Image (cartoon, rainbow, N blue to C red):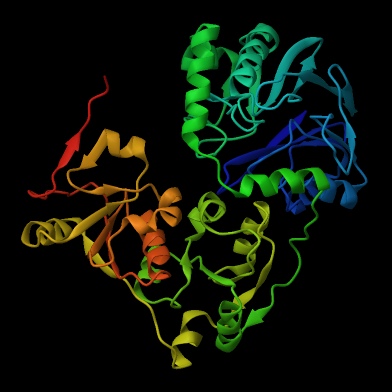
Amino acid sequence: MFVHRIESPGVAHWSYYVEDGGEAVVIDPRLDVGAYVDLARERGARIVAVVETHRNEDYVVGSAELGARTGADVRHADGFLDYRYGTAIEDGDTVLFGSATLEALHTPGHTPGHMCYLVRNGGMPWMLFSGDLLFAGDTGRVDLGPPDSAEEFATAMYRSLHERVLPLGDHVVLWPAHGAGSACGSSIAGRPYTTIGMERALNPLLGLDERSFVRSTVDRSEAIGRPAYFALMEKLNLDGHRFDERRALPVLDPQGLETLMDEGGVVVDTRSAECYLAAHVPGSVALPHAMLGAWAGWLVDPETPLALVSDDPMRDATMLARIGFDDVRGVLAGGMERWETSGRAIGSVHVLDTPGACRRLDAHAILRVLDVRSTSEVEELGITGARNIPLPELPSRLDELADEDPIVIFCGSGRRSTIAASLLERHGRRTEVVLGGTRGWSSARCPLHEVSPA
């Protein structure tokens, strides 16, 4: 048997290509399905089935597209929902490929119809594709159902884990649907491979009694936050969204870019933070490629037409499509050089290193620090006197920042600060960005302070 994990950066999504005897099954495919088609072609195999562990909220699933391209049978979980593609899979159903079998295990918790998929070897449990039920070091979130359902979902998850998954045996290899950085878990570990035994030993949630597990899982889930684009994902993942990553992206000249902005579109600059800070299209939103999948869904309306300033536009357009942002009208032809030579205004943001920021703060009391790190980061290591507005909350809390205050924006490295600066510029605010984070911070007026856990 051949198992290959395909990782989707940005959303930390892990999907799987599983092959035996020249036939393959794909589990939880992403929207741009070329990777699976190409892999099957290279290996001389045929994709015969596509299965889903649950209706996803954080990315667009590619089951309908992959089924259309390959003729594979598509089976989805959460069969009580109104899917427009595929057929529902039920507890105990099997999917045959080569001489192997995938067995569906109903494991409610993350969603009511969540399925894990078990592969046996000689009748013994061998591998489990655990979806969003169990991750390395964490379990899935339980707050994405109807209002006030989180405790019910967490209780179901506890019982799924202890009655259906853990009894399979410590030797069973686990293949979860997400790695560290996903919005579907609060503290997924960086272990790329794991087993039931490793999780029993290392995952702190598996040692809790039911009551403690429910309380902890609900609290951890709700602390993650729920970006607005999740609602769009839920709709697209019932409709069977289609996308062809092979399409060409139109190019826009500076006038075309201005026209799109005048008509309410948004320009997304996916270049590095340093490039954006030095020179950018005024009014554009900075979302460096490495942060595009993680932050676009929090900060940009998915119904808004987009254009890109990008060093690799198709890569970025595909990344956006994975989270439902597929109304990308084009890319600035010639990049910033074309914009600059057209004679148009150029935006820039003043940059401070951490020692420079500290010197400025100690010399000018009026300077205000806006810390856009998460609340948990600030609780571990904060800046005395700084205003903390976590980046996801910034668009709705701009009115808390007095117009006359000079703003120095701070985060862990300067990347989130750059995004925040671009959002503030769109509202007419001038800012300065600190690159370098906490390392080197030594302000006497605004010292760092550690908060020890109780």
